[in-house]
Image (cartoon, rainbow, N blue to C red; front, side, top):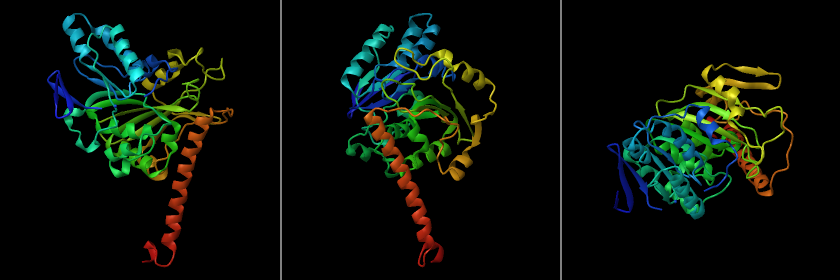
Length: 354
């Protein structure tokens, strides 16, 4: 490994991945084994290099390791495994915990970097900077320093951290690569300019094939914000996009730190994944397929579909409440602006009358 022009460069299996010099979150309740096992985020040591651009303490990375370590039969395979896992974490304490976590999982020289994944110009990335697999639970609900937006194209320059990471993921996913990402509900229904641009890029340049809706308490008690799993690859533009809702088990009203979501709660979803069918219930669709064209044109990039009807209202943490209202306000403002633009076009001197 060698430093060049302020960047770290290293070679893996005749391939070079470069990480910018500089980079949070420690939020675990969802069983990360379910994140991998349920949706075939599988791989072979020889074939793929994985990265988590905001790896926290390394929960998702260790889940991937659990899969690949079954293939380690000799020291060469172990060395290949060591060189196929990368992580970046901005915050010091989670970074140190992640390195420790890797050492405990027999990774002798962890490729975990203490830097900010967002502090690099997106347009400067080349094929050498891209990865085969991206597995992430990016920070959400927070906001980066205003200067971070300067590293992003104007149309993707969001103030929301999760949006920024989605852009990084798309720019750094290798051709034919795969990604599995946790995003908040706000990403699905948000209609501010940046979110619309990001989702348009996702649907027109990447194959978003599955959206899994998760119950609101999956990450309780760390956050009450509802989340979703996005599965996409860099093979072609999206065609059919499947939505599936994971319902709360009948034996509980919500998940918690002592009773977290477990792999068994994905059993129905795993069975459905291999044999996809639309599932209609009395309160609406539990699983349904939509075309990318429908999501783009008819829905206007609002992909909040197959959601949870008749949910009991829960009292959120004050910060989560504020974030939810901020998301809803931004969406309403975007809708109002759209309607006003249509009305202005109808006035004398407007575009349609010019």
